[in-house]
Length: 179
Image 1 (cartoon, rainbow, N blue to C red):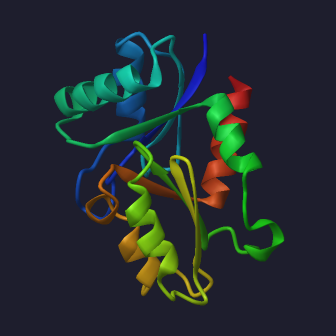
Image 2 (cartoon, one colour):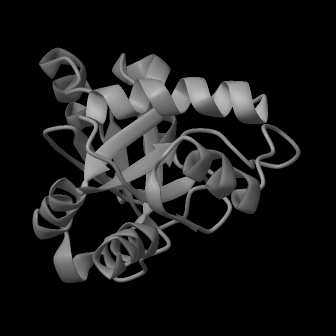
């Protein structure tokens, strides 16, 4: 059965939208998903399911809302799609601090005019590269005061967006390959 990665947006940030990872794994196993694994507390799930990614996104949103009482958008990538995200890394050695290097996973490709407007902004030393349904963002000064980070949001992009740092992205692929 195909391995898929589900990225939940906006859970376990401070006191808001708290979800226990053991309870989440149990909930999903109860819905028939196999080899359910989670990574850290920020809503990273690796599981096996024959469902198409778009169907899985909708089902997980509903199941998590019903079972955990938390409304969260979900973005899904297959194991091979996640491997491709890593292979397309536009920054390579330049983004050496992987905590400051993020991939924003998007539910769909954003409007090309929005992408051009963001890419045209002078955000130096920050950098962004849009590639399909991902935006790769290098934040050398960190995320706290990132002008770029404020542009890579659902509201600005017009699609669901959820970001993960490079360490998490690569660990999710490793976890998918273990299953």
